[in-house]
Image 1 (tube, rainbow, N blue to C red):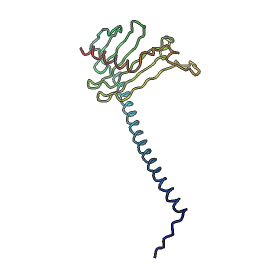
Image 2: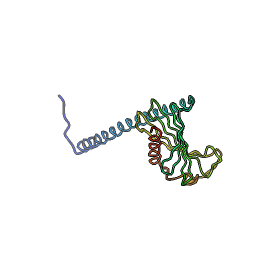
Image 3: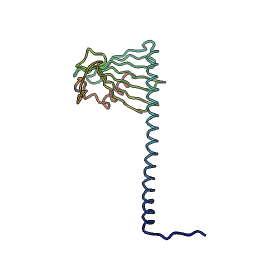
Image 4: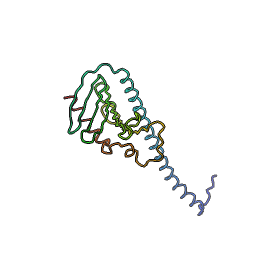
Length: 192
């Protein structure tokens, strides 16, 4: 015969505590599942961006001959584009500010996979590695990631600068939104 212990105040406290912990455990488990899912998604995007970078290096190494060169203006911006089979290289000059950008647009089966825009430092012009790079990654024509990097010249000690963009003379108006819009206008002009 099974004997049941009478419910005491202590046993009720333990039962209440376990119920509260179950809710907490469920919440923690839910957060854990969401974290694992997002981590997997993040790793998936990182894997895709890595594949896109590899493809861009392959395109650069097998560039081939120029298919077309085109010069045009958008507002006060002069653009010279050179089109290859899987890449479009643009030299962009802003007439008002004097800023110069290089834009490399990588294509796979006529769809953009990567846009890399390079702005050289106006203060450290003699250093090739003083530049700001903005990259837009695409999968099946859809923007999946964007990255911005600033390269500091080798051996230069900066201390702890508060604003690298200002310190290197990069144009703060060249935001990623503006660069996406400009690239879209460039592609429209190239495909006219």
